Length: 79
Image (tube, rainbow, N blue to C red; front, side):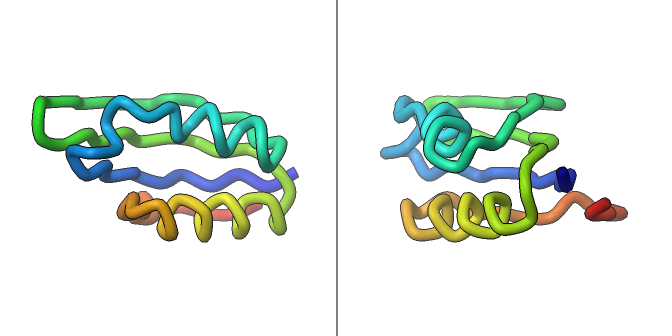
């Protein structure tokens, strides 16, 4: 199992879509919400993700393809 901390920035049209649930279900990833801030125009969530290296890579690609900006948390170490 690998761990990765990321901040997801959701555009307005994705705020109400269950994107975190989708990556958990589709890629067998365990998300742990560390911080969240949602307004009417933007959503920002910092997550710790647990899963295989390949699943994490595929989940990030999925999020980016949907239009979610994925930023690594400073000091993130994949173990």
